[in-house]
Image 1 (cartoon, helix red, strand yellow):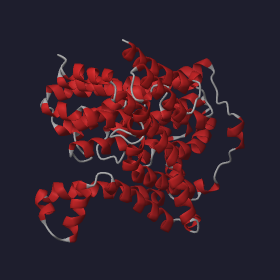
Image 2: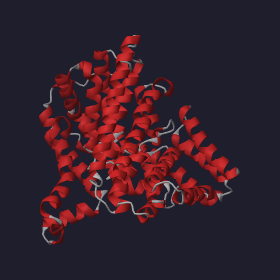
Image 3: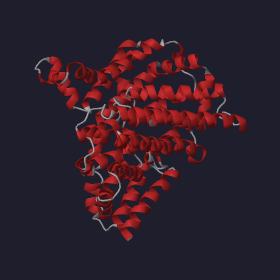
Image 4: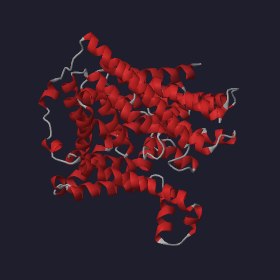
Length: 458
């Protein structure tokens, strides 16, 4: 009994510490210690093996995905510094109007994240533009957080096929599938998330206007100045690097679709590239992002002279998102080493629930425990995915539905991404979390269950 109480208390404490603004790395260590003591685990083994270096250790995860995080952050940095990202978003603003600020934010974030820009970098890139749009539309900042979350943390993160996001790469590595696995299910889930999300945002926008809520900048917002390069770049030119990244990621799939699997059997350069692209689910998207960064540096003179410094700064941008994610995975690594977790896994695998529903509850709870979709997905793929494959679930279906299921309870208050977003925007959980929770928790769960129903029917 004490072991189960310790597991529940550790998750509750992790959420509480996150709400209080405690550093997520420190919080993960404190809560890991609570798990260790309540479950009578070896302190030495827990903090030298399970937490940092085990199969699900923090640095095991960080080492495996460092290159993807780094290349994504570098691409986001050069896109932001060159003004290309802002040019794309401002083009949307001119065509849709400032009153469509929430639509613009969602579409711009979706385009950036689907192109491979790391979510944390999108937050920094979009916030200056978001301030301008919110001021023109006179909308409260809390709705910007919700729109940012919808565009960068829902359908483009876990549902849309082809995205180079970590959440699409993890199941690809574990199951041997490609980034387009379960494409139709992903498209169906994306439509549900986007439709419900925009309905909620528009409803909240109208209610805010009726209540007289207005844009209220803080001191940091007032000090921020608009980058003059935003109005000087052509959106068509700014879009080229994004097309390069997406094109490189899509090209192997197109070649296989057009020419069939026999193209992989050749010995030419094309065949070798296709073999590499299909076998290296982390390296190929990483190289695509890196090449996209090089294209930006070659195209825009404003960043060309600072190429190395900007790439270096981008690499630094990736460290905290990577370490924060790795820290909660390390906490999950300690949790999964307990007898209670083992019994929970056996219970879910042996339950009378349909396999897809059992999978949904399993991965949702794991993502909720570690406060990270990528963390929960990694743990699930390492510990439980083979059992669900053995139950007869198609690998492509498991890839897509597992990725979507990971994007629900991952956004509880202790999520590193949630904490980072509120830090950047200068808001508190009390001010903005309700809207973000509806967008990133409630709606993705509805979309996943709806898509699972389709999978069960078809």
